[in-house]
Image (cartoon, rainbow, N blue to C red):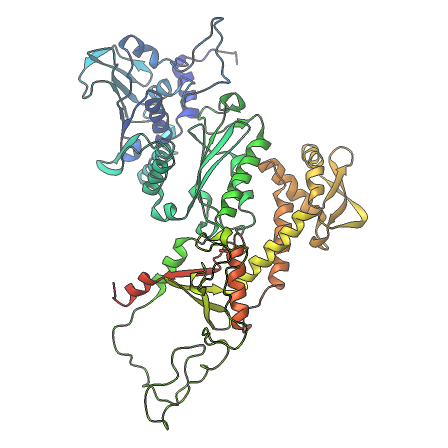
Length: 628
C-alpha cells in the first residue's frame, strides 16, 4: 500500500481523539481558553452529559473579527509569541493553553459555534464549524460588552464509533462537575456557574485572592469538614513554592480521590507529586488510607515541561528531587506543627453515636443488690435507710474513677517545662489548674482501656494503647534520627536479579539506602548485591524488598518500601512495647500519659491514622440533654 497524505479533516479527527476524549475534556479546554482570555465570570452549561450540548460563556477580552477564522485552524494560537528571529520558546509557557488544537479538534467531530465581541469592537460576530466544514462569518447578538460564547452541539456526531465508548449521561455529567471543581480550586478569584440539564449544579462567587479566599473556595467545594481539618501549607525552596491545604491524618479517606494537585495553576496527575504526598504521610496512615490535600506548586516554567501530552495533564520536572523534597518537607512541617491535634470529624462521629433516651426503660427495675454494668461509674447509693444503702459493685475499684484527692503524688502545681511550647496559656513556672491542660485531668478509666479526662470546657476520651503506641513510636524515630541505623551483615551476600534499568536505579540510590541500613552495590548488568540489611527488619525477604524498592523508584522516584517497612517494624515494636489494652492504670500513670501526649507531635493519631483521643465540648454534651 503506497504512502498517502491524510486529508486535513482526517488529521483533525485523529488529533481530536487525543485532545477531546470525552465531554469533560472538551469543557476543560474551553474553560482554560476562557481563563487565558482573562474571564472573571465563567458560565458552563451541559445537556445530556455534554454530548447533546455544551455552552461556555465568559467575560474575557474576546476574539477580534479578523482573527476568528484563524482560531479554528490547527496550531493557531495567540498564546505563543515568536522572538525577533521567529523562534518560539516552548520552555516558557505561562498560559494554560498553547497548542492551538482544542477548537479545530472539537469542530472536526461536532457542531461548533463561536460568538465573540472583543473589547475594541462594537459588534459581535459568529463563526460555525460542522464536522470540519467552516461557514462564513456573520454578525450576531451578544449579551455583554465583551467576551465569548462557545457552543458545542452533538459532540462526536462525526465519529459515531467514539460515541460507543462514552459512559452514561450521569457518569459524563459527574466527570464534568469534577473538572469544573478542579478549575475552580485553582482560580478562586473567578466566579463559576455550572448548569447540568437546565439545573444549577454549582454556583461559586469570586473570592478574594490569597489563602483566605482559597480556603473559602475549597470549603464550598469539599465541605466544611475539610476547612475545619485542613493545615495551611506555604513553603518555598530554591525558587519553587508549595502552597495549599492538607488534611490531618485522622481526616483520611479510603481512596485518593480527594487529592488535587496543581502546577502553575494547571490541574495535573503526576506520579512524582502523588508519591511525595504518600511519602509525607507514611508515618501516619495505613496503606489503605489516603490523605486529603489540595496542593499548588508554583515553579519557573523553564524548569517544568507541560508539553508532554496533548491533554496537558502530565508534567515533567527538571529537578524532581527538589520538588519531592519540598513537598515532603513542607507537609511534615505542617503535620509536626499540628501537634496532638485530631480532626473535628472524630468528635462529630462520636456525638452521632450517642442515642438519647426520652422514654422509661422497660428493663428490670433497680434494686440495691442488682449488679451494675461492668465499668460503670456514677454513684455510691441514693439517700435511703442505712440498711438499704450499699456500694454498687465496681465503684471502688481503682479503674472506676479518679478524684483530685487520690492517694498518691499530688497534682503538679506548675506547668511542665515544655508546656509553654505547645500551649500559650501556660507561662513558664505559673501555677495552673489541671483542667487547663489541653487534654485535661484524668477522672477515670473505662473498660480498662479508655481514659476519661475532664477539660475546662468538655471531656476527652483517650485510647490508652493507641496513644502510648504513638509515643513509643515517636521516641524510636527520634533515636533513629540521632544516629545511624543498626545494620546486620548477611552471612552470604544476596544477589537480586532485576531489569537493567531497575538495577541501575537501585544502585544509583546506594547512599540513600545506606542511611536506612541497607547496603547495596551494582553487580554487573541487571543485578545488585545486598551485603547488609537493617537489623530491625530481622530475617527479611531480601529479594522482595529490593524489588519493591525498584518499583517505588520507578513509580515515585523514592525508596518508599524500605522506609515503610522500617516504619512498620517500628510500629510493631512500639505496639509490643506500649501500654496494653486491659491494663488498669493509676491516676498518676493516666495523667502522665496525657502530659506526654501534649508534648509529643502527631499524638492525635496512632501509627495507622486512627484517632488516639476524642474530645467532646461541653456545649455538645448540653445539646444531647436539651440544655441548648
